[in-house]
Amino acid sequence: MLAMIYFCLVLILLNHRPKYGRWMLGYLDSRLNQDVTKGHHTYDDNCEITWENVADNFDHYYAVHLGNWFLSSFVIRDFYILHFWQVLDEFVELSWQHILPHFRECWWDHIFCDILLSNIPAITFGLWIQKKIGMKPYNWYGEGHENKSFFEWESWHCHKRFGIISYIQILLTIHFLNGFFLNNNLLIPPIHPFPILRLLLWFGLGSIAFREGYEDAITWSTPKRK
Image (cartoon, rainbow, N blue to C red; front, top):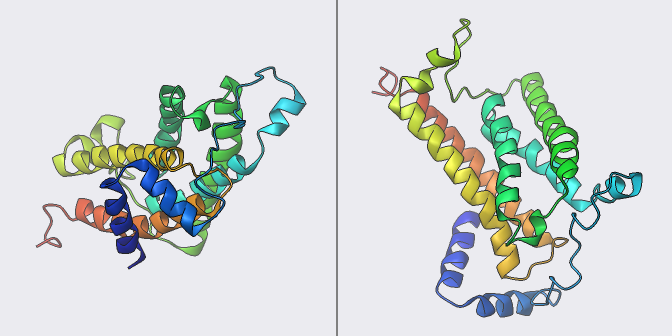
């Protein structure tokens, strides 16, 4: 129900100019519909490796990184896709940082603060909890447990699995970019409940959708599917 309300709201905004969406959000919350780019903190102002510069990056973005990848591990539940996606996101940030100021970071920020100290620990902890409480893991690539080589994975021999994996990566990249473009176009500041509530809504919806997609993949051309 919440997802349908959100989608209807997005469809309404798509038929109007951005200033209408900014005005509507500003009407609902006085903190919105204000210029947030002026004086906006970017993370490539000083890329000298000092304790002050490194410590400055452990802020709300770092906390959101931890929470985002922790919850993402419960949605996707696959070691390979999660780690491929988190590295791909860093390349996406590098490709769009000339448009989105949120993506401007120092090289060591991408590698150490994001990948090594945020994404990997959050994903590892999430997968560990799932194993402890007995949640069903997802095996999107179909690597198996019979010491199969990389080229023997089912994803390279089943067009259904390969198509679903490709669709997942495209969908995740679009969703990742869309979140930042939405905040940028509607002048939503980074520290605001809206981005967090939107992510929580997508995690709930994504957990259902990814389960359906996984069941579709593993039952393809099987008696269980029939």
